[in-house]
Length: 288
Ligand SMILES: [Zn+2]
Image 1 (cartoon, rainbow, N blue to C red):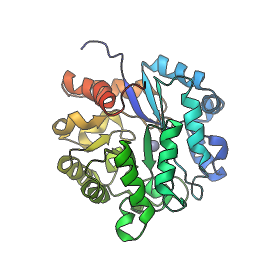
Image 2: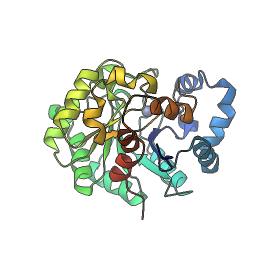
Image 3: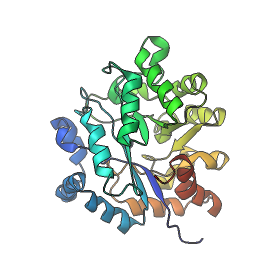
């Protein structure tokens, strides 16, 4: 296989950790004690992150950010943080942001402001924002307005699926079947299903993926060596699978190790290249 020089990791957590609640920070720190000071410095300095990416052979990374003040501690400043951080290298750093459906007073206007900031993708995190991904079908009007505006502006939406272990998170909102509604009601919206419902809802996740051509699978958070146990028919949707690691979430210590484990899977070279490089380039083209 020819060397891969255009790998995009669509899902890493570079966030304003100084805003995070103490109990959440403790959960983030677990397993990372030895490199904790280094990780804190990464959150402050994009040059450190670019070194991490260089060492791992990763070209671009998506910086997951979203407001979740009551569970995680992140406020709307998470958006300006992401935008400012990514300015260090707009080609390689892709800032993601969010609008909180339960707290916004102007959902469409807030999405427009994210676009003006340079945000490349909107993240909805049901377990951390304490709502089902289809809550607009049950009265949460602002959530539908966010999806609608993202659809109109061509902004992809990433939705967390599966469990979350952070204190206060509501994992019952992690069922990917709720994305079926979103894909039906917003047919032009490009939806990135983060984590494929792991570790509980892979059958639902695969159904939604197969049914809806504008839903992508972000494999972050799934142990790469076990990806084909989680999704035995992954090859059928390989043109909509995106590489991601969830670094530095608990259990994810090294970007390169995950890539090497993925490369060892019995998938074709063409599918590996699509998942690591080209699918993400189509969804999130190079800026400018
Ligand atoms: Zn994540």
